[in-house]
Length: 139
Image (cartoon, rainbow, N blue to C red; front, side, top):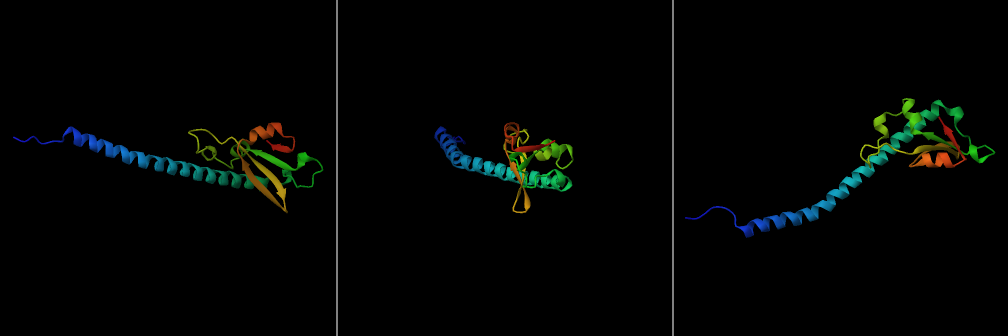
C-alpha cells in the first residue's frame, strides 16, 4: 500500500523556495513603502504651505516686505499650531507620514523675494525659531 503525502525532502525544498522568494521580494516591498511615505510627506508639505499661503492672505500686514533695515525683518516663521488653531489645517493634516502617530515638527518660513511671498516648510524649524534672531515668529 502506497502512502500519499510529501517526503521530508519535498517539504524542505518548498520551504527553501519560499524563503528565496521572500528574500527577493522583501527589499522591493520595503522600498515601495518608503517611497509611498516620502510621497505622502511631500504632499503633506504642500498642504501645509497652501494653508500658510491662505493665512498670509488674511494677515498680509504682518508679513515681511523685504524692506526692513534689520535682519529680523527679513522673514517670518509661522508655527503649525497657528495654522491648526486658526482653522487653516486640521490635526490630521499635521501628522508626519514618515513616523507613526507623530506630528510634523517644523514651521513655515515666509520671505519676500522678487516681488512675491515665498512660503517654505522647513522641518525642525522650531529649533531655528528659538535660536535665530532674524525670524519674526507669528503667534
